[in-house]
Length: 113
Image 1 (cartoon, helix red, strand yellow):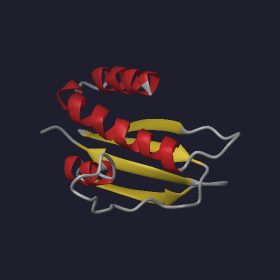
Image 2 (cartoon, one colour):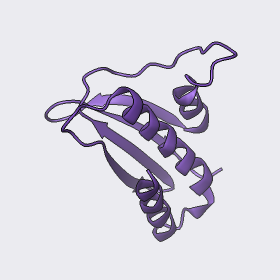
Image 3 (cartoon, helix red, strand yellow):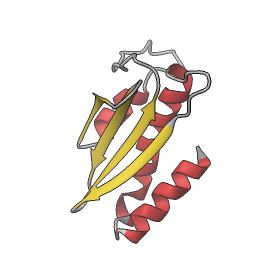
Image 4 (cartoon, helix red, strand yellow):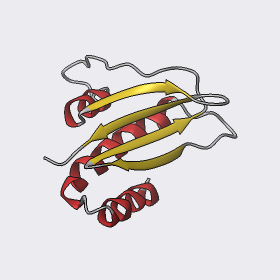
């Protein structure tokens, strides 16, 4: 995960969007954690992709699982189950889409501010 966070930081800096670094890295971490914990398929990699459109950044996490994630309402005393809720709150929009081949792409888009 550290490598992916570093690559995102480099991309944001090169695009002149460092002001959204904290939020973007947090969103990436939550999406990656979700993929590793719930969607990892043996023999298949989890991959990340980052793109920019104007002042918006798109963060994608690709995995080989066909199961789409859902925002849950966690038990107040639970240590987990809040990741996608955070992604929903911190990003301008997020979603899940099919991809060519097996699996899915979970993505979030966010801008500065």
